[in-house]
Length: 135
Image (cartoon, rainbow, N blue to C red):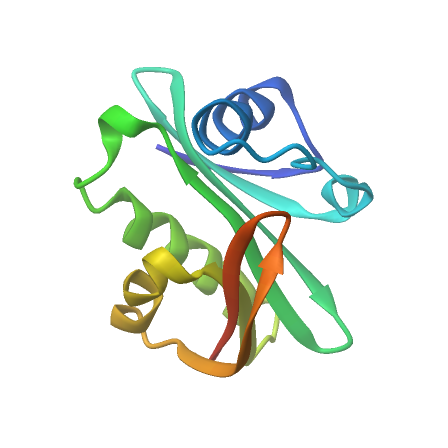
């Protein structure tokens, strides 16, 4: 079951901290943008297992912080949560989405129709690349 929230809550913090801080080693996971974002959370038996956030910046929507608990990967939840966010963006009148993709998983976004744009850059210690999609 998907739920949409405005701003952070404990369920979102739990999934992102588990994936990005504990598992991947990021230190600057939470930022000021979080409180102004919409956050999608997927629940399995009332347990939060996946999340992402999106926001509008100058007519460009940004999807980010896509995170799934390890034991729920490979079940196509990533695609489903992205589709949910894209549908919300489309309903809000958005037609261009940008993601900051970890290079190691850029093919996930390519399969969803995102195209690489620009050069690889570091976010903390991790290589990322900007990818875009027209709705």
